[in-house]
Image (cartoon, rainbow, N blue to C red):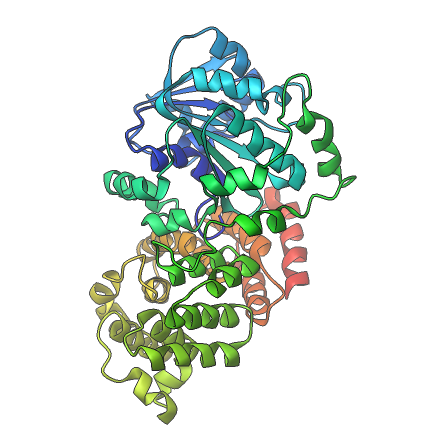
Amino acid sequence: NAGGGSLPQWLGAMSSLARPEARSLLVVGLGGGSVLEAVPRLVESIDVVELEPEVIRANRTIASQRRKDPLTDPRVRLVVNDARGALLLTEKRYDAIVSQPSHPWTSGASHLFTREFFELAREHLARSGVLVQWMTPRFADSSLLRTLVATLLEVFPHVRVYGPTRGALLFLASDEPLAVEANAARAIASAPEDFAELGVFGPEDVAAALILDEPGARAFSEAAPPNTDDRNLLEMRSLSVARGDREPGGFADAFAPHDALVRPSLPFDRVYLVRRLLARQLWIRARRVAGAANDPVERATSLGLIEVAEGRPVEGRRQLERALERDPEAREARAGLLRLRRRAVVAGVASALALASDLEDPEAAVVEGWRAEDARDWDEARALEPRLARVGPLDPLFADAMRLRVGWRLAQGGPSPAREAVTLADELFPATGSAGDLLLRARALAAAGDGAGALVTLFQTATRLRPARSDRSVAREALRLLWTLPPDASTVGARQRLEAMLGRAR
């Protein structure tokens, strides 16, 4: 996960966000089964085409170790075949097709990125059906990505590109306009718990992943050659990119002139979009989106949050104060300043008195929670639970409230509060993408007696660490937690690798 759900979760849910009325789904490639786990309950039937029987066997082998076994889902029907062969053998039409073939240079997958496959997929889509195509930029330079978009546009009149996680792109294609963000609210309202696991609580969470809308996709791919069976550019060149023989970079710069979020006016909360981009560590794009704002309060608030995130608190404070001076009701700016000046606010420093005076919930509840936490007054922190629980996921202080709710449970001790803390941490991380919040989850798992889960989460924490002072502190705390986990002979090697990773990061 990276502040907004993992790639398999997005693959499983994206077609429902685009078309909430979709009830039938075809998934090309079983993989590890994670995509199936994330398909919302809105979908009633799921056909999965898998070329390799060993992949199915592997999924069944680990079924007992999974949180949820997707192959026991009554909606799922497995088809062992090549995807193109399976489609040629049926006249069935689907509301959505999700295609996640593996490496585009291999014989089993290369022909699933061509115009001919996209034409076959279109023939098996119901009216207004949507194709969701996966690709990682690790396998493609900017020219190959232009070719992929151009190929989709030769077959479908409407194409969009989303980047929901770092290092992964989703291409949506349909014969009808893709009003994804407008439709997302309907999908979320129908299955809020399913989308909350993805870190999607409102249309803005989907919009934050949007890179190219329909006009942007056309402009981006203009004059690019299509990818065809008899001239398969992805098959010929993607391996060179993956091996490093060709330079994989440049695609972010190539997208930039056509970025759907870089507009003076947006139908979404720009500051919230910036927060989501920062959670995914997309600093450059966040600054580009912030810089496009016409509204001075929106612009100053966004830039202030970016400065703080990039380790420049003095400039961040200056920008946030500028926003609050212009609009004393600017909640995002006030929340950012409260968080930045937490110690002064809690200590009652004179310069922070005005900022902390006359607060109402949720700000008041969070500030009282900070004071209780600093005083180690866990009874007071627990008494604030009803007020903190009302802080919604779109609120700028949501993460702060959730950390307080996790914190008093861990301080109280015992397996039951720890399990509650794990559940809350699972809601928190998709909203922030923070290594510190992953560490909080690892602490909760350890307190609940799940050492294996804590170890896995510590590995995830290590991969999220950045060379910043705050993350070095997280690395040190993660090491201390690792040393407290009970020894297990089967994980000795893994623990040693993790210790080395955290040691380098601290």
